[in-house]
Image (cartoon, rainbow, N blue to C red; front, side, top):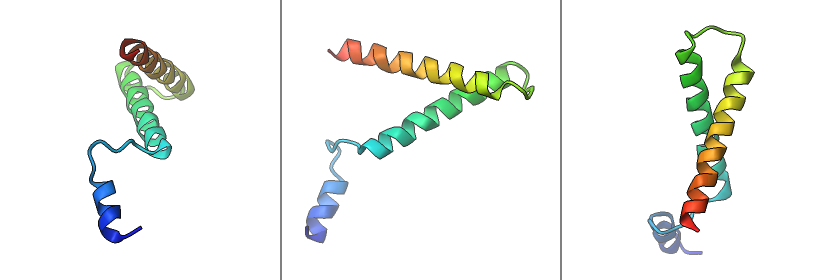
Length: 71
């Protein structure tokens, strides 16, 4: 593939995200929400796994709702 085509493809706003970038964004959203939960309970340590699993559940639920709305 030529450099011009590669650049065009990379700058295309209609281009689909790669599965890796989706996974990274998903992970970042969970991480951010887990931190918010941690802060909301006074930044006390010892419940990191609970914060993470709660955040993951919330984000997955959001994604399912978005998919249902789009269908």
